Length: 177
Ligand SMILES: Nc1nc2c(ncn2[C@@H]2O[C@H](COP(=O)(O)OP(=O)(O)O)[C@@H](O)[C@H]2O)c(=O)[nH]1
Ligand SMILES: [Mg+2]
Image (cartoon, rainbow, N blue to C red; front, side, top):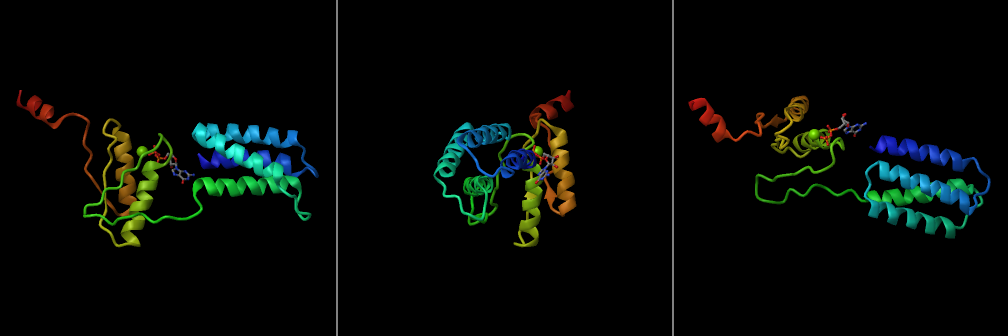
């Protein structure tokens, strides 16, 4: 997601950087592209609107320093805003609760939940010396559970054995028949 977004932003900025001076139309065109790139990266419309508005406001009112071109200035403003939107301060995971502490990963398909889960598990285990168990709730997609199992194996963290979405009672009844 971020790779495609940074590709698109890179292309937009290449167009801006070359110019000596920027007019309002240049900024507008770049903002339209940025807006589209953010929407395609599944950023929520509300966030996109606020982001574009904020950048436009700052870009229009910005004093251009002599040493940089207006294009570079816009790139910096967009960069600052991206950092602000994504969060500029690192926040540690709060594990301050009675054990077992549960961490739930929520996100769109393909956004990196499973991969990030394995990374967090490895970090918790190796740096914080925590005992970690990975469990997939994606019980309707066996391949998703298998993916977590494989990643768990790679980082040396246990995974909950694969279960299906079928009700265990139903499975037991069928076996009785
Ligand atoms: N380049 C890159 N790819 C990633 C990253 N995290 C996940 N992916 C890839 O994105 C795809 C979807 O990731 P996955 O963890 O399965 O997403 P999930 O559907 O939210 O569980 C997989 O092909 C991952 O290898 C990352 O940080 N960088
Ligand atoms: Mg997944």
